[in-house]
Image (cartoon, rainbow, N blue to C red; front, side, top):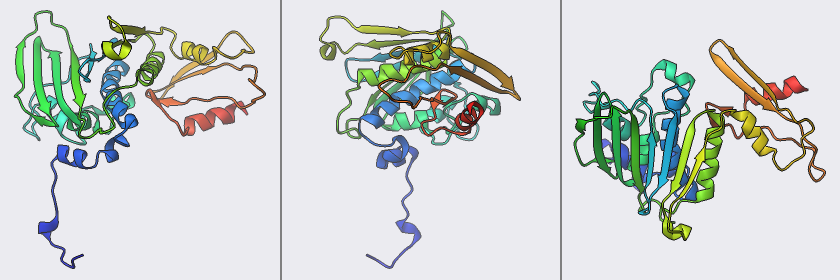
Length: 300
């Protein structure tokens, strides 16, 4: 121990260095929960486009080499130069912590307003390749361990499609227990998001033929036009409902939208406690919140 405390003892870390030094601060841990959180962050970025009304399809692919590709048909992350960083908006989103790339109106429907998501995923990946389709161009850039290793390139987009595709491989130096994703964990999460976004199509493809023990990929499609009504029917599929029709309420006041689906059922195995799931902008509020408390008070 030393009594000396001076400025030269202060270490200043780059964004990617800070995340790699203390990854648990950003994703919870470096085990399976943290590993899957990387996928959630990228998918949630696409979900934000769906919530804003610009995305109708999201594809999630587990690749044979351990990487994951998430593709959406939203507007595509902007690529113009950001005046404060001097980088393209795309590169800033992927390398600068707390870089929030949404307008104030976007906060109303965004589940990831903290601005950490993609930059953290990038920093904790062995490599990340991003492709953006917008403004009749296809933009691409590659990063290694959070650092850009190529310039942003552009080529004509003859089909004029829009959207963002992010392919990343988690870094085994960070996730030492391994980078093998658990299929049921991801399918449960993606299915839930599809229920919470009626009409949105989410396609999950597992290309890990060795793990599957198959000669062809496994493909599952989730799309639920009736949204949380179908979700509640799914949750209650193993119990006996007291009424066949699900009670559904929807309203909008002062720009805040609310949806409620309710169905009572016969207690199972003498258990009388019910289940209440609360969500805000597709994020499960595991500890409840004022919306859940108000609902309970209203019923009582």
